[in-house]
Image 1 (cartoon, one colour):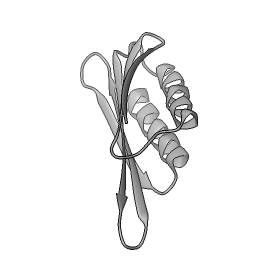
Image 2: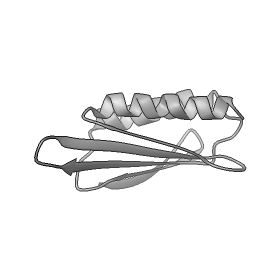
Image 3: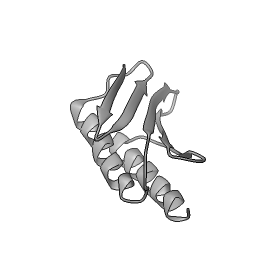
Length: 101
């Protein structure tokens, strides 16, 4: 599932490899962007990549997010088994990076 939308003036590109992203997760992505916006003067784009790898022991999920800002972009990722927790962790990592600028 891939989709692109414009959210609050930001180009949002979401890619999910062989999985469907629910409306609730899509809304969580938008909520995370709203919170990240408080820490950046200008955000041009956000790329979000969801991936799920089935292994013998667990289903390993990962979320990668790149925030396009003037200058160098910021990037964060996390892996685990809960999409919502992963999004929250990635959001926190990105906010910390933006606060350092």
